[in-house]
Image (cartoon, rainbow over all chains, first blue to last red; front, side, top):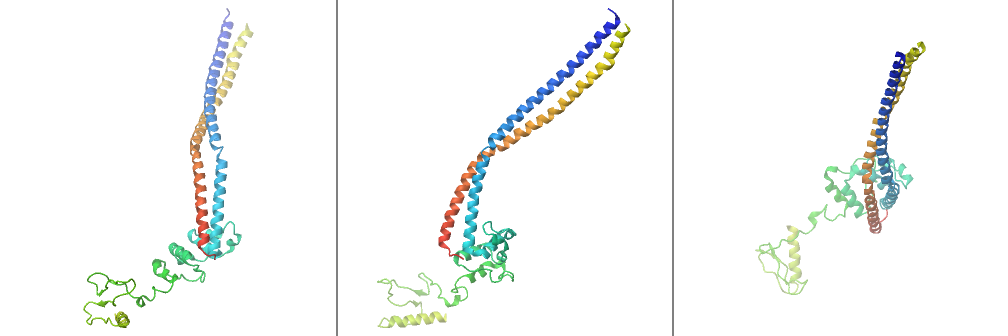
Length: 227
Length: 85
């Protein structure tokens, strides 16, 4: 065989070897790609299956929450009035008054009274439950009506004038016991005392004659007044 | 004879380098796709695992419905108890 033929055969063999090497490497790489894509497809199918009911469920949740928001907004505005309702919301969530209520477009233009600066949340709740006091509506832009650090004292003003400003005009609660200053005797008939109670060591025996009960009662009241 | 040597030279100096160059390009391209495909597979698997909690949405749905029902009951009672503004 001539030398040129041998060299040609070697050259062809080299070309074939190169083609085989690179094609096999490419096949291996493509197989790895195929495996990875299979995993990806499995994951994507899982995502599709798991997210399929999300739309319906989230829509249902949003529907219920919308109904709740409508209910609470309507109830708040109905019971508290637009001004106080906006003030309450702004007190709980500062700046929320600017967004207004969803079902009450006019609430965006309502100026929120400074409720949270005037009353604590507990006072607001008690006031709103106890009476329809237009709290803070009188001076939404004025100074705070009380010091927030001492809310319990200021809250008294929201209740009837019975005890909080005139406690001395109310009779004191009786002291009971065997060594109490005023002794009470058990009555034979309910609601009727044998005699009015007398302080221990007070001196004279109370009268039991006709009209004695009235006199001893008056004496008891005078004694209480003096004390 | 001379033509055979010329053919050998062409095979060794032209054809072989061109074949090697082209096949190496194909191999490099295939190898560059492998990491991307593996990252996509990992992301899809992680995403699928993250969505395992979507079954809890059914519980959330029930809880929201019950909560709104309770709030509606309270609202109805408050509507009766409290006077309107």
